[in-house]
Image (spheres, rainbow over the protein chains, first blue to last red):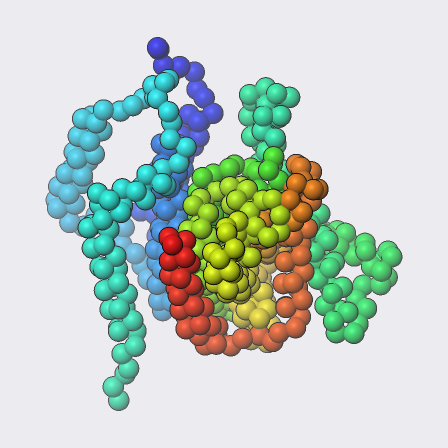
Length: 175
Length: 348
């Protein structure tokens, strides 16, 4: 079976999401206004969620939006907005620490390229193989059978973080 | 519905565009009717008459309002962050509209019968939070920013009890698809989850009190999530002028307004699906079918919209600390306890 080379609707969607992710990611990095960076991050996160959907990972995509946009991004925005005189702060986007930065970037790029070339990609799914309608039930099963220990450890870590946050927030000022 | 369109138009992109645009055909007349209803109900509760001049009992007033909003000058404050200011109404409306994708208007019409429907709605509503923060920040105005921050804090806090209520329903039905949850409660009013779902009598009686509490928790939390009185401190007029949309005029203001009312229907529709059978007819197979399904769904949804309006004009506004107290110290512990109890009953 030869893969269909004509562009399908999903292909256009893929290029749309990929372009959106790269462009908005660029704004996050290069913008001199920290609030613009934070809002641009939302588009990046959404575009990545869109890419997850195209990979048939629906649960992961929705979790990405819920955790990153609904949780972390809102937290970042609160932090940014409640910081005093945020507009006056000049963000340095110049070049500092060139050597360590390029080493770390090279390592990450190498790892990504390695994963990209070494993985067996299923470009065209088998015609006979059933396509899973949802990944949620499989993820749920895996979490309470094979991965129950990491799951519980993660929940304990989150609980500790939550108690710590509450402790710090409750600490009263000494006069 | 999708198959019908595909057979009509072939497998083209138009099928998806029409499927995606259909909820808009519902939202626009719905918003007109609800705005009129809200003003009329409010007026009669306060022993006034409201609109009487435009048309019979003021029925043309919403159209007049729309014409006015269309003609209004679209002002952008000079100190505003222009890009974000222009973008924010669309972000807020997109977040609201995205939720309509998984609302099962009828067994035959659902934008996308996602297997993770409810979870998807919880997730996309976070887009509204970011949009509100964007509007408040871009206005460059302390009232707007305060309104936006209050609104975001409120929505994020009340997401927790509402997520627990949704979780309870998911535990009982074993699915997150809104269509399957409705299907689970079909064949009669006694099978609605508020009355314990389609289980044998003993289990039903055990579930009934907990489902009732869960319904109240979800309804209160959903009222907070749409920023309406008694939870309207984000736009408390006496303190904040109008909250995050103070600086917006013309169609941008209309987008916020439309999105608020669309959101009101979304939460009412979720209440309907989770606890009151969704599109399922209360009389079993009598008066059921694709058309009747849509009728029941919209009727039930509108009923909860009206309850919301009724409460809005009955209750006074909460203070900020009371708001947080209700969410964290009342709703969340009760919701946790109910989730535990319902889980035990379901397993038993």
